[in-house]
Length: 170
Image (tube, rainbow, N blue to C red; front, side, top):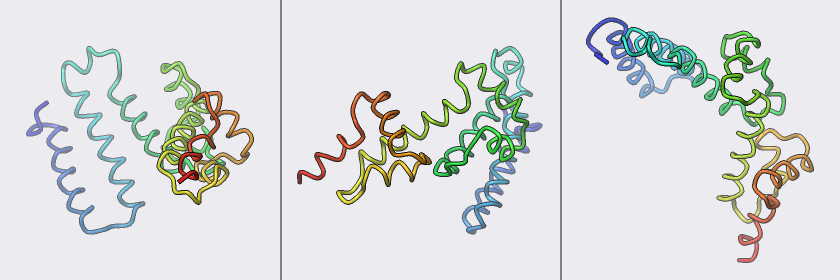
């Protein structure tokens, strides 16, 4: 990919400007908008490349999925995070969001749950002695401690409290 011509050059120039603005400490909402624009420019630049049209995956699709993932990571603690909220936050229709995930073989809701469980696992793994399983569950967006524990046990084969026991034994 040639960063000196066409949309790839525009992407490269904009990336340089965004980097300078990040160093100035602008508000996170402004940085988020600039990030969205970067993803859009990158996807357009990738589409310009002759090989991109031959690939089975669309660069625009991949850019949307990357934007969705960023949005979800940022809002994972919100128990009201839903496919509708994600679609609104990413500027796409709920129907298109579901169509993007259909190709992955996983529903949006299931993917959100998996992201929450993964974040909870990491938080429990690196937690302090004073943290409780309920605190971690609520911090990653679960609104029901029992449902969290059940889902965690089903995914990882042990209770979330098992990760805290070695810490408490010290």
